[in-house]
Image (cartoon, rainbow, N blue to C red):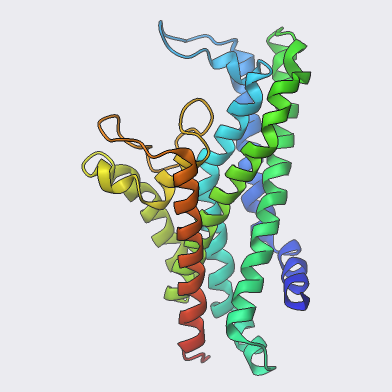
Length: 272
């Protein structure tokens, strides 16, 4: 608990924390306001209504879909940035020198990242909802559905699934940066993995659907809710995984990433 609290305090002062979630929330708000200000102009026949993102209660799911879809990339980068800094800044060496367990330190650090991710997700969603309300006002769309009980009742489950997916993606970046012992290498490799999985889905859809970003998309509901979790989503020619099974595999990827990170740290030679 002491290491976990210390990790939270450390992350609360990190520029990467505010930059990562601030960019995500800011981009979301800008897109929503821009769509509302355009009044849906430029919409082609048969295309989805762009003003749906400022029309409640459907706006709740669309906002969360956007956060989870783009948030996967931000989560990988954030996890890699924090893990890499432990090596490049020498904080891991300092902790080990004072007698801390390497594995416990790594796991406590990631537990703090998971909590920060939950708070960042809530903050981004709240900002997105406020932006949608402003956008609806700009576009002269009534706010009658904002208090829809059915939509509000589904949000906790959507949040829980989305948070699990975001945490797994963060763990992936965390593990990559730990293996490379570098922020830049971890971030670069994580981004390459993110976009590479989407590209590979064009050729190997039956394999890619078991990879982390596609699983994250499927676990939160790849239909009207989940969006494209960065991996492009399972191709239409494949047999899709159920959301619950995908969530189970998300947990497997999460645990595997943390085992790799902790195992490598236990055996690594810490110098510098």
